[in-house]
Length: 126
Image 1 (cartoon, rainbow, N blue to C red):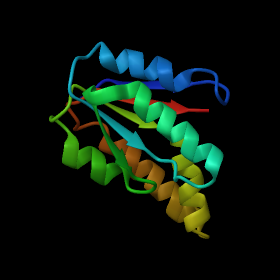
Image 2 (cartoon, helix red, strand yellow; image 1 turned 90 degrees about the horizontal axis):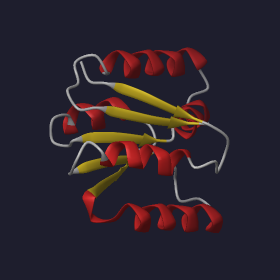
Image 3 (cartoon, rainbow, N blue to C red; image 1 turned 60 degrees about the vertical axis):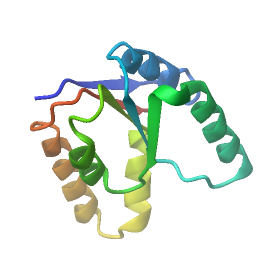
Image 4 (cartoon, one colour; image 1 turned 135 degrees about the vertical axis):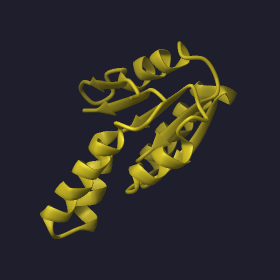
């Protein structure tokens, strides 16, 4: 089973930077799963700053809903996988699905998907 680390904190408190430093200790290559959409100008600028800071060691995949699919497809190919941000992922699911039971099932499915993974997972959430 992969090691799963959860990093929490307030908005813009340095969670992403801290999580990235933990991932870098695992070596390269690294995968960054971004759950935020580009949205407004401020979010687009924040995303650009994050991408620039991470540099070439990181491959970025933008996925707002299907974390399980991305994790399964990329397990074993990277030294660590960072998911940023779980809060935004959950918000995306809630906005997409009126039926909250569907959202709860997706959360359960995602958590259960961690057990067979080999690659360390770092989750960021506010």
